[in-house]
Amino acid sequence: MAEQAILSYLETHEEIADSGNFAAECGIDHAEIVNAIKSLHGFLYVESQDIKKETWVLTDEGKRYAAEGSPEAQLFLAVPAEGSIAKDELQKKFDPAIFKIGCSQAGKNKWVEMGRQVSRKVVQVEDKVKDLLLKIQKGQVCSFITCSADKCLKTWKGYSVRKGPSYAPQREKFATDLTRENLQSGDWKKLKFKEYNFNAKGPPSECGHLHPLNKMKDCIKRIFRMMGFEEMPTNRYVESSFWNFDALFQPQQHPARDSHDTFFLKTPSTTMQLPEDYVERVKQVHESGGYGSRGYNYEWKREEANKNLLRTHTTAISSRMLYKLAQDTKQNGFTPKKYFSIDRVFRNEAVDRTHLAEFHQIEGLICDRGLTLGHLIGVLEDFFKRLGMSNLRFKPAYNPYTEPSMEIFSYHEGFGKWVEIGNSGMFRPEMLQPMGFPEDVRVIAWGLSLERPTMILYGIDNIRDLFGHRVDLDLIKKSPLCLIGIK
Ligand code: FB9
Image (cartoon, rainbow, N blue to C red; front, side, top):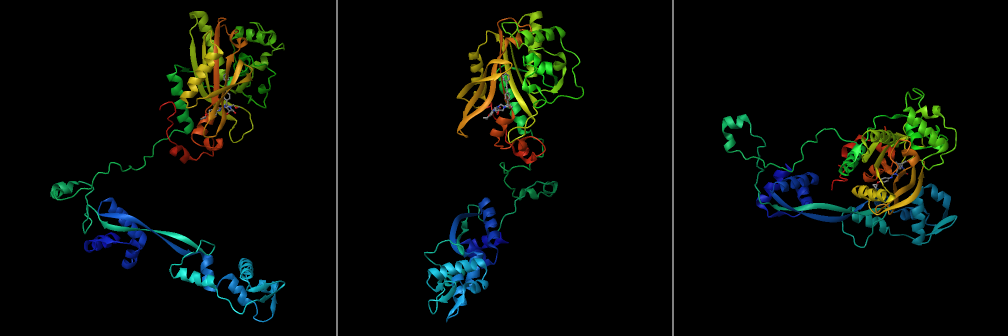
């Protein structure tokens, strides 16, 4: 109906100057007119220009003063013309807000003498505030007024409308479908078909959505593969203390090895089998060193190494893979390797905004002859550049299984600060030699979490909104593609 009103009006008039007045004249709600204008505009039946009008409108408070008078006028009228009235008497007549404003305004206007007793200082007053509000209410233009508690400027938006390139007094019904009946009846010949809107978004397809962590994981896997790394099998959350700690030359009294930091298993509490000859060499290097090391000089206990736990790092997988590589070396000679892993690790830590008792560790390692710290820094620069992080800084650090070790920092423009983006180092000979690697084989390695980059990339502030029962599925559905390493 609004459409027809507009099209027929334009049949005899150049333009609709103001959609607001037009709506009022037609007795049609302005919003309906606006929707009709937008739709007719879409089909080029009309052309429209925005018109804005700022009008003063009264707030609820303003409406009350326009009706009952301004607080100061109300207060003045409540003060007896002769004599005075006790302030607290007067106060009882008004609600606190009105009384407060009334006192300060009437005082400022020198209408009343404010003391413990209140008396008039003038015979009568003119309630200009009320008059102004009434004027505004009647839509009379008032100048030099400012926004305040009782009135504010409302912007009214409307349109002026003219005929468009495909104007017609009636909206042509466009066929949106070619039906069998159309064909049989032949009336398809005279039907006008609606243009295909190739930009129309189809109905949202209810399809599966990858969790942002998995999107990030796939990106990082793609980066590793592009750098020639192969993925290590990480499908074992339960690990023995031997591969998780001892093989990494982490001493049995190391604080990380007690239940405050590590989830030990009740059942199966101990591992079934370990490569005995290798275990013996690990025992030796812990107790008395070798390979140029003096070891830790403590009594190494097999039962400690047998304890099963939830792996605290995917470096446990690295130790297994490196041991296997060393074994292969004995058979078939040494072949350099580049390995990576991305999977869950478990730490009995205090949960906070960025830490849960489990997270996904990303680890990369290169095993080759004669590798140096320079190689490590080089591969870190390459890896993190592909992650969009350059301008790295390296800070000496300590890990039981790497020497030297470095924490990695990158300057994050958005945060305007240096962010710790990972840890790295060269695996100790006390770890590699007992495995059976030739003297000059070195292993450089580094690690970071999957959650931190995902939180930063997807702007998620609290890790519990990213992982766990509190995750809002919409976050997953709406999370954009991860283009890291692609562009
Ligand atoms: O991920 C971490 N930080 C990070 C990484 C990327 C990132 O990307 C942003 C888009 C820009 C932002 C931040 N960290 C490692 C640093 C810190 O968050 C740290 O506080 C927390 N760390 C976890 C361990 O927490 C106890 C992150 C996790 C971590 C730490 C070390 C390793 C792996 C994960 C390692 C290792 C390693 C070292 C040597 C040899 C082999 C493995």
